[in-house]
Length: 387
Image 1: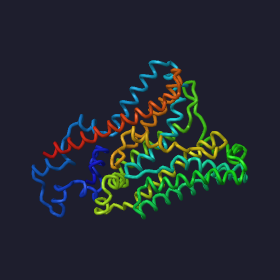
Image 2: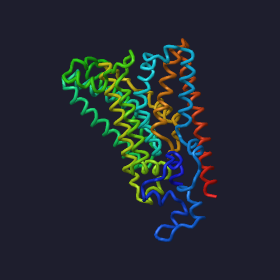
Image 3: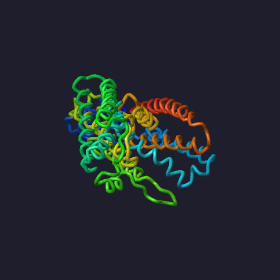
Image 4: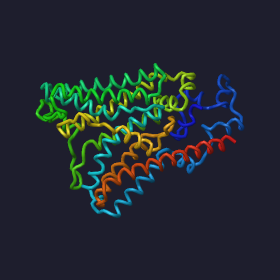
């Protein structure tokens, strides 16, 4: 049913007239095209105006589990390590959380739209290598290299989306092919052009200082240096949340992830929406790849490989369902925050870093079980509200 996930995921009434017809189920459709006011029994049967209570609305929010998880992990590591809760310590665990969060937001939007992108991780490496080759190997201005990398990333995202909607094959298969091809291209092209797998010297290219100040600088606060990527992360979280909850495009994303056939029936441009989501993911990969290339001033040919699974894990921890139609950008950001706190917290308390994988797997399992329970609760709440 279209809108089942979207309604629960947003906790907001839809603002798209076309989708309102589709989401309202039988009662909405029965009133379409007539001017008579609704009877009291019809009003009780309409989930859009039913009063389900504040507590039920909060429990049905996809990011609730991530909020609780973030609080528990902060309290846990903060109680064991004074450094963890100090400004320098916070700067250290917010740094990896920020770049992961930027990608997790885009991946979450794609998952809400019912698709996956397994090439997102390696694409960050492709972007970095493009910038490195053009700026340090061919002497181009860094800004020109960044623009070329942006065009390349958006083109790859369009190709992933176009092949997915035109062939009808699972995006898992399409993007797995993209992942393998990009992995081979990154390694092969870099070795052919430079005879090595490492590109260095980006900081010697013209335009680097200004580009670094925008994408890879730091801001002093409370005696610590916080990466500017954290500001990018927060701004994109707010923007993505606004798009999902307050725009027609947000309704389309939930609709195509909930039931793409019903979405098409009510006029949603499903193919364009899905292609746009793939391009959004590749755009995020461009941003993160640019940030890392300018920060490190060097790029490895295998950069980003394997990160795509961490992006998906962060989105799932944040409340996104693997089946699509349910999730939030805030939840994905919180999932990235949990990842950042855990990865640095283990170091601060002196544990073996091998335990990080155990915590990551445990959090993923708990998140999937929690999301499943929340979805069942949300569905039962709507059924009770319609009675």
